Length: 244
Length: 316
Ligand SMILES: Cc1cc2nc3c(=O)[nH]c(=O)nc-3n(C[C@H](O)[C@H](O)[C@H](O)COP(=O)(O)OP(=O)(O)OC[C@H]3O[C@@H](n4cnc5c(N)ncnc54)[C@H](O)[C@@H]3O)c2cc1C
Ligand SMILES: Nc1ncnc2c1ncn2[C@@H]1O[C@H](COP(=O)(O)O)[C@@H](O)[C@H]1O
Image 1 (tube, rainbow over the protein chains, first blue to last red):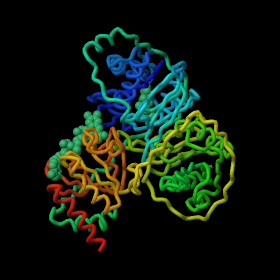
Image 2 (cartoon, each protein chain N blue to C red):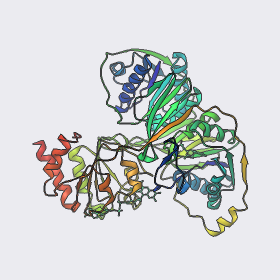
Image 3 (cartoon, rainbow over the protein chains, first blue to last red):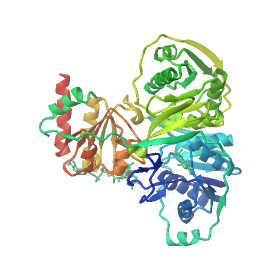
Image 4 (cartoon, each protein chain N blue to C red):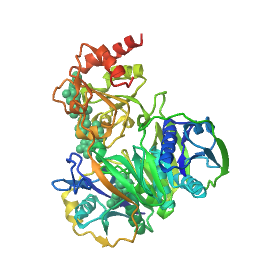
């Protein structure tokens, strides 16, 4: 089975968020970057597990500049076989999906993460599926494959849904798919020898740009309430916050 | 023309669908155009979507279960036939898996989880959404002729202003390649977490799963949905679907009550868009107090039952 996992790079979760150029761009200085947790912990690890039990290959793809190679190398260290980097700024979800789709022909399964933790888009997976004219299962929490038939469980509001789909198709991975794997020394050494192919982007007119960033309104000071007086809390929730 | 997909579940329109129609109507007002709704199959109250702003409702028949591929095909065809310039869906799991497909099919710029009515600048529309898990707000400019958005839940109140609208039925092609074999719904009549307006959540400060009775009683008294921090779900004290935060469910209820949760940044990422946050923690230095509206610095085992009592008393 040929599997493709889309991986993105995001600021580490505790990073301070600042902007530059008149609040039009994210200030990357001093920010540590990581592989998007949904891509790493869930999508990539499940793809590797299936490779281990069913055979085949796992390829990872990233749309981004050369500085993203560290993230691809980490995926190779965890157990992917080869990497593709589309050498372009990931400008918008549609742009990224177009680039991924251009490199996703011939794969039985394409994985995305549920969302990236920076822009929280949750858009790319469905777009890749549409470009490839394949089915898409969002927020998959469980995936089993037998021959060319897959059984997928996905989260829906207030429950879950199980469906059967023939490969090829695209899915986005959510918590539950797999457990995080830490790369070991051997994996890190092997990763250095694995292929990482850099490809040129396909042309595409972007349609969406971020025009500005702002920080949310500062929270007003927390009002401390006497633990003996919960009637006061209820009154404040009713009359001041008006949420009850 | 603005087209909104109003999502129904089990034959009913959810609050998120009514929010989406209201949002679509207000977007249409910004553009000086009309708003129409597209729905799939029969549901209770289809005509009354007109009250929320749809001047006409197009009902697609023949799509038996949700599949983003068949739904997107049918909805984008309606959008093209009607000459829609903006297409709106709710930011639900269904809406999220449609948004990207609609963007590709309609060659449209897209923004997910929009939380404010767009503003127009010529033919360019500007919209806002929370990014970096609520740590910042981004404004997007969309230049394409057609635009698609998903509306973040609980961003505006559904508004009934007009009257019932006429329904036009259109048949759609099913042909799904996804074969749904089982649907499992949580029991009970409280709202699922992503849609809940009131949430009571607890963390490691609870000491063990056997102590959750006080949380459940408070939630029951409020009619709230229960949630938990990640370590609580990871150790199996509570089911996974209750886990909120960066790697769990992101929520924005009107009220979020957190007991025995320290307020780590990854936890806040999923809850800091809540309108009102109440934090109960015995540690005055707990970081969660900085993100809270109301704080109670005390032992949760004493305070939580007291809140339940106070609520009962207030009800009379
Ligand atoms: C990449 C990444 C992603 C993560 N994603 C998430 C996520 O999505 N959601 C999430 O929740 N976490 C997430 N975490 C974990 C997060 O960093 C914290 O470890 C976690 O939120 C802590 O859970 P807690 O507050 O329940 O426990 P603790 O941090 O142990 O806090 C327990 C709190 O209870 C208080 N307490 C104890 N006893 C009492 C009492 N009797 N009365 C009142 N208060 C009491 C203590 O003072 C303390 O503040 C993530 C971490 C990483 C690295
Ligand atoms: N620049 C990128 N390169 C490769 N994959 C990406 C990129 N951006 C997003 N993805 C994939 O798309 C998923 C959803 O991203 P998003 O729609 O941006 O939230 C991520 O979890 C990744 O799997």
